[in-house]
Amino acid sequence: MSGGKYDMQVISFMAIKGGVGKTTMAFQLAKFLQTQDQKVLMIDLDAQKSLTGTFESEHFNFNGKPNIADVLEKPSIGLIETQVQENIAIIPSTSNLEEVADRLASKPNRELLLFMWFVKNSQELNQKYDYVIIDLPPAWNLLTKNGVAVADKIISPMEPSRFGYESHTKVLQSVGTLQDEVVDPVSGKSYITADVFFLGNRIKHNTNSSHEFLSALKHIDNVIGVIPEKELVNASMLAKEGILEYATQNDKLHEQEPFIKLLRDVFSEIQKQGND
Image (cartoon, rainbow, N blue to C red; front, side, top):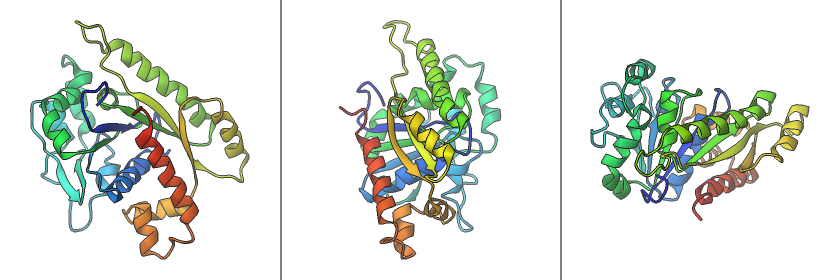
């Protein structure tokens, strides 16, 4: 977490609307870090459970296992993650998460429930994990605010559309407002210290909308990379695999080498940014 509180990096993926590749990028970043032998804890704060679903199969699900609602309702709880792959664990979401959030809306420090859990478990989290990756809901709500409060970095994917371009302003305004509201009463310092970065995603180089979008991105600060539309991404997500893993298994490694290198460069940039 930010401000030197923790050694691990906490990266939250945020979007004001769905369908921009937020969950996909969160999952693929975790799989990239896995190849580097980095230990990753994933947290699904989205009631749609898309990230949670990427680790489920006909042989395994999270029914009866602890989930993120347990953390938010009782921040004094210990670590409750489920190990799902080598170097990857997850605190899954639950379909009634929005109902849980409604119940928590009257609690004091309701935007800092996840923050309090991080503080309580900071030593063990630091020992076990190099990265925490959080998938936020596609809305500005209490769950999103909790994920923003613990983040070192916020990555916000944007798609080539007018709303996609305008979303960067809404993201910055929302985070800025929360930064002003969630303040330590003694020091006067905000608990919100994350750097916000933007990621151009699903770019089609043969369309006017994508050309206009790329031109617009030049006027936005903190754009961390641009990722073209690729069927490889969709296919790997359907297979619930990392892109490198999927390409290797399906004899597409040589054919897709330039795209895989681009994606790895973007993920490396995410690792580096904000660490100076």
